[in-house]
View (cartoon, protein in one colour):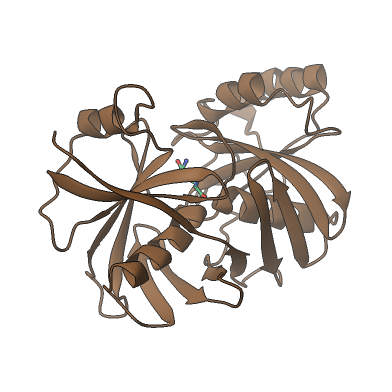
Length: 287
Ligand SMILES: N[C@H](CCC[C@H](N)C(=O)O)C(=O)O
């Protein structure tokens, strides 16, 4: 029997497992089964709480998408991680450092039951995202000009403007849309998520700028599809919006599942995300 806690961050839902006090070894197939909303438990991502492997961290934080792929970042999941380790008395610290495959995150309990996460410094170089491009300002290299035409056709067809791309420890592309309600998230999201210009696939954000301090956002997540909220996607959208001189440094990100506060002071600085984390129930599953 594997004990777990079902949690969510603004409706982006997780199964969180204490892999310190339980021996956990799950195959991609078992993760896919557990993520199934009819035959399994159902979740967007599976989060493992493991013993720290770095001196500067309190825990190791591992993240698996619904399709079983292991990834290196999950912002909403990080807030739930903090709530979980406190609720399970694995830590009573007000500030928790967790190591992921993309670096160390600092999770801090804020006022009114919110949690603030230092999501690290965004990476902009195509090789860091990764994105097949010759340089940052151009998202296409000569040898993939056809891809550009495809993307441009795609973009012109659906009224999207050229996208921005950034890594928050996981790859994101962000398209600016005129109306979030009519954005073709499923169609464009699926095509871009696994497009050849993203060698490791990508999370695809659709951003509608309301004013410099407020955006609406929908995200088609790599390995999962559209979710009700995406923390790293909210960070990526604000970074791209600031880079494109559309946004200020403190932004309210309105997602279908609720609101996040994002702050970024600019290049070389970390992104801070503040939002809720909710525990729904404890359960067990025999695989
Ligand atoms: N829901 C997560 C994003 C998961 C990212 C995952 N879909 C990936 O493949 O990078 C968040 O709140 O940041």
